[in-house]
Every structure is written in structure tokens, then in C-alpha cells.
Amino acid sequence: MLPLTHWPAEQRRRITGVFTDIDDTLTTEGAITPDALQALADLKAAGLVVLPITGRHIGWCVPLMDGGSSVPWPADAMVAENGALALVPTTNGPHTSSKRRQLSRLYQQDAETRTAHQARMEQVAAQVLAKVPGALRARDTGGRETDLAFDYNEYTHLPPETVQQILAILQGAGMYTTVSSIHIHGCFDDYNKWLGARWIVRELYGRDLTQELDRWVFVGDSGNDQPMFQHFTHSVGVANIRRFEAALTHRPRYITASERGGGFAEVAQALLQVSRRPS
Image (tube, rainbow, N blue to C red; front, side, top):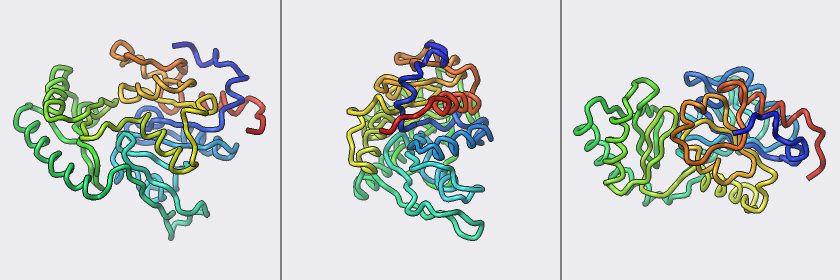
């Protein structure tokens, strides 16, 4: 991983869109840092596409996007549950305290498939909770629709061997698994952030992300960001990715000096400080 300062200005000048992880990339202990929120707004104001993509569940994402938590995040869409579904604003009009921004939901799965998978996931969850001492499901108030998540580093802290026990049960049940900085995920379809990124660019803009990777950058911090690090031409890890470095097969090309939201703000500044050419 090279210092972010090694990212050539000519390459930065061509960037028109930013994908970013949320937990421990934009946030610290679950809340976005002011510098990261301002960085999102500055990128949007400069005309870049901004697309957060997270393993968090869709219900957790709604107040961030509709303004229920304070004001809507300045993002063109938010992709949730490791790429399986997304929230898209139906209007970009001004937000007021009396009226939240309206959102639509886009899914990769049809309703019948989601219902069937939810029933199977409940069976697997019961198996994990019965067999693994200390296992806890993620606090999914507001609804998780397409995958199963267990907390290992948010409200509880599980040792690596316990994480591996949970992964073994999920995989034994035929689930695809990923591990974020806080949660262990399992789902019955092969969803990951890379596939979700390709899907949302196709859905929103009718374009093939693989044909324009020189125009995008991804910023992340943990294991479930590896598909993005693997495929993106331009990828950046915030400094706290160092704690996962030894376990990563695919690492980002660049790394920031600061952790979490401060690191994301560095990326935004690196993009905004170069003069921009028309696409």
C-alpha cells in the first residue's frame, strides 16, 4: 500500500465517482465524523457521484438517507447489505425538518426469493446461537432483508476462533460469507460490494462499471472491502486498515495517513485539489 500522496494528479483529475464503505471509513463508533460528512458534501458540490456501500442493513441506512437522523447524507444512493439492495432518493429537493426526503428501494432479489431465504436464515441463526457460546446477532433494528449478520466487534468482542466457528456453520449451511470491521455476514446469494457496485451503476446510469474504472475510486477499511480492492483501478484504505492487513488477500493501492473519517477527508481533498477536466 502506497501513501495516498503517491496517487498521480493526472489519475485523480479523471475521477468522476466515489464509492465508499461506511463503518470505520466514514464513521467512528457508528457515527459519521464531521470532516467525513463535509467531505461527502464537497464531493457532491464538485459534481462527483457519491455512493456509500455497506454491509449494514437497509433499515439502518434509511435515516441516513432520508434525513430522519438529522439531515440527509449527500449521496446519490446508498447500497446496503453488501450489495443486495439500495436506497435511491426520488427527489433531490431541499430537506426540511417537517418533511423527510423520499426514497425508493431497489433489489437484486425478487420478493419470493427474499421470503424463502429469510426463513432459511432464521434456521441457520438458531443453529449458530445454540452451538457457539457468546454468539450474538447484530442489532438490526429497522430490518435486515437479504443476509444474516452476527456481531463480533461492535457491542461484543469475540476471539478469532469464535469468529471461525460462526463462519464454519454459515458456510456449512451453503451461505456465502464475508467479515466486516464489526460483523460476520452470511447470505444465500453470492453478493459482495463489487457485484453491488456494478449493479447500482447499471441500474442508475445504464453503464458498465468495468468499462470505466479509471473514472472511479473506492475507499474502505476491512475484509469485506476486498472485492472492491481487487477490482478497482483506484482504491484507498483509511489508515485503520492496518489492523486487518495481515489477513487481506487483496489490499488497496493507497493508504491514508489518518484513520476513519479523517482518512476519507484526505481522499476527498486529494480529488478536489486537482483541476478537473470535462468527462
